[in-house]
Each structure stands twice: as C-alpha cells, then as structure tokens.
Image (cartoon, rainbow, N blue to C red; front, side):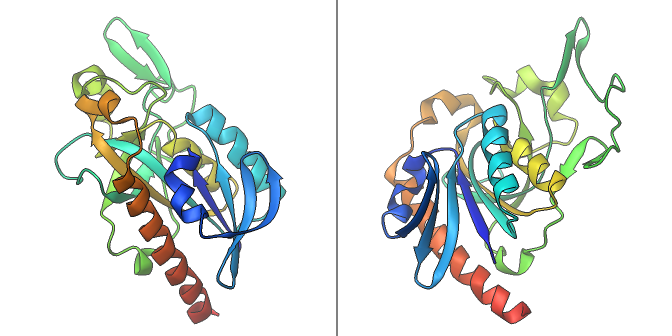
Length: 233
C-alpha cells in the first residue's frame, strides 16, 4: 500500500517525523520516510485551497498512490465536535465559490455555471466514497465546508451554511477531496478541530496538545492500515 500523508504545516508533524528514517527527499516539502518496515511519503502542502491543490496534484501525478491521508485543521460551527479532537470529514463543499449579489450569495451552481451533478459533485457536495470505516470507528463523522476566507461568525455565511449544515469549516478540505475524487485516489480526511469559529484567529497557533494528538493518531492509524492491508490480501 503506497500512502501519502498530507499536512498544511511541518509543525503539526514534527514529533511524528522525528521518529522516522528519511529514505528519499523529493523536494523542499515532499519526501519518503520509513517507520518500522513500512515506507510512505509525506507532503507539507501549505495553507489554502489553491496552494494545496497545486502540490497535491503534483504528488498524485508523480505517483499512483493507493491512499492519501489528509491531516487538516478546522474550526467548529456548532457544539457537537469536541475542541482538540480529530474528526473524520466524510463530505465537503466549496462554500464561497460564486457571486455576492444584493440579495445575498449565489454559487456557481445556483447560476448553472456548473451542474450540481457534474462529477465528482452530488447536488453540489463532494462525498468521500473511500471505505475505511473499520479502522476509523473512534473518529466522529462530520460534514465540512471549505472557504478561502474564514468568516468571523456564522451569521456572515448563513446562506452558505444552510446548504448542508456542516459541523466544521476549513480553508482546504474540499480542495483535497476534489483532487482525490478526480484522480480516483482513496482518501482519509481527518481534521483537527482547533477551536470555535468565533475564536478562530485566537487559535491559529499549533500547541503541544495538537502535535501529540496528531502523532498518536498517525502512529495508530498506520499500524491499523498495514494490518488492514494484510487482512485484505
């Protein structure tokens, strides 16, 4: 199983990477590592949908990965997702691709510039069809929304929010999901809930709790994935 781990920043993975053996350096933000007997790649993608799309697409074109693991960051839009936990984002959508008009916001889908059913969309939503439910039972399943600009509060995106009533918002989740769906690459999308939307700018920094949580999750997840692969084979 050829796996690519994607994270917007090195800091979140620094503790995890510190225990790995470097096998091959593909570039400034992309390398192959080994943990125990298993090798996999890590891509530090940067923040924002356009930047992430660029680096992820380059990686996917370079190798035919069996699975991408995206460790993202998000902010909670309600009280259901626990702050400081990783959630399993099973669907996502581009919240702010469209036009601001006098009566509010209209998406490209609303103007029929893109069909809501055009692959890989389902009624304008991107759904992750990869089935790793057997090893992701400890993560809460949530719907996500992706915006280039994270708003100060839910009121500012009310018309966008009611489209699918997502639980978390990020700046790159849908971009990663779109790239994987278009390339027919399996995806596990785990997002660290850094704080509430209203306090987003107060929770931009990555603390030890986040680093430790991500490190533990990745260690356990990789063990389960390689065991899962052996069972399937």
